[in-house]
Length: 293
Image 1: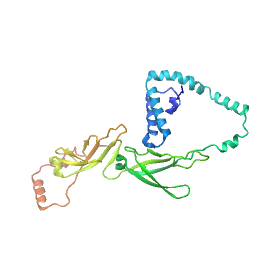
Image 2: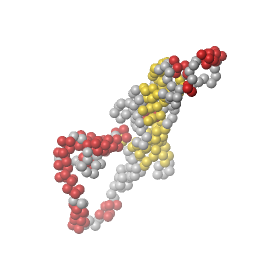
Image 3: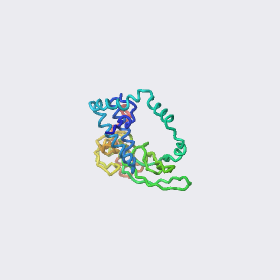
Image 4: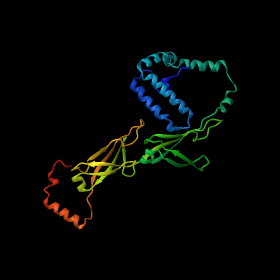
């Protein structure tokens, strides 16, 4: 049976870690090797299987204790030997069997090409729907090369899209490097992203705010009817559940509509007459209300 170093798979240096540390390491590795960010990478597919297997064993205390006994016999002793095993092995290899053709063989060792990293600007709508984008980069010959990129749904600023084999060419038959594209989300339109929640503004007329009403609110997908309570104030926020940004678990954040009361710049004669009449009969004076900010 092949021994797998689950701690190494989760990039943990020791077995003396808590369950919370294991969970945190698992989330980082699962995100790094997620299929949507490593399209066409067979190695990434195998790696995510090992990551899930490692977490399944190490996240259960009883199974972790059993595994730690095996891990200590395979890895722990080597780690605590101060590197003597590795040094002795290298010492014997060079003194016991010297290969005079090693230098020539080394020259023919396949070398993987370097990765290329770049950035791409996307809108909130593009990341929400997972649209395709086109970028143009210059290759080693200075010529433009076009790449079609599928933006994964729910990707966030700072995360990277990996295009397998689209980096610098390998040497001596080695594989090409990858193209890593870092996502930078732009704030455009009437939507702003905070965590998984989306914020927007909702303009109301003075009479809609005073009397209460039902209005249509724009979301990323459609319009939804929202009840406006009587006497709502500018700056108040209305929460619309499950209309925010997509989470990795398939759930959604919320949409928050901030009230903005808009007064008409031009009045019809009838509107002006009604406002003048309201001004005469109303005893409301917001300047006397110390609680209004």
